Length: 294
Image (cartoon, rainbow, N blue to C red):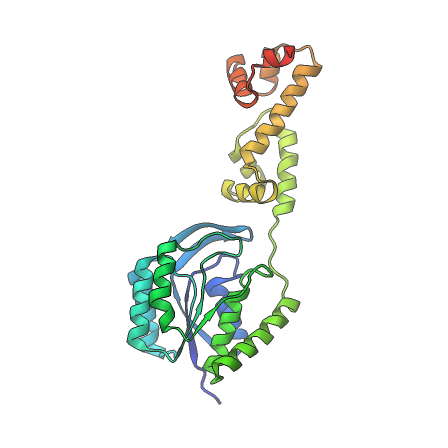
């Protein structure tokens, strides 16, 4: 039986498993390799993009690398997301100390949604200090599929661990990724469905609730995720959508009924006519009475 050569992946985590350490483990395992890991950053992430980062202390990253290197001595290292100068320092130091045979770098600078994952200063430092140590630097267009370059780099690492030359490893990895593009169904969130549910909820509750947290709780999602959905689909915040709907209904009441401004204010859940007037004027530039007269 052939001995399995472990592959160390140094990168961040992805809550959706579309990229990051989770995808590395899946790809390496699928190709018969064995993944060992050092996590650099934990992301709060949905299918719409990254919401928040928690970069692990550089000492913890260094400890993970040292533990793996001392114990199982991987000769192939795959590097992904590095977000801090301190983490870059410990990664570079470890690579120089342990000198693995192959170092594959997946240049994780932008997310598949176009969000910057590293500062310009850090990118320049990566070019100067990390790239000279690498056997291969991976650059692919990720527009087709989230995590595509990540999986390609992992596949290259596996074939290198099996003794293939860098050129052959890249050819085999490309062939593998081509099959994945055909076969893989990406994870899709419920953003379109949720957006429509949000609009329906506003239509039902706009007279009594204009608070974003109310609608997020009603739909059983976080306010942050709801904001991601609305901005991705309409380019507006949840609050802007609520206000737009509410002001339209108020305008309709002002123009088509004989109710007083005070009555309309109370009908739409405002605590006073003064509060109602202030809200209307902020959004429309005129008072309800002026709007009605005009």
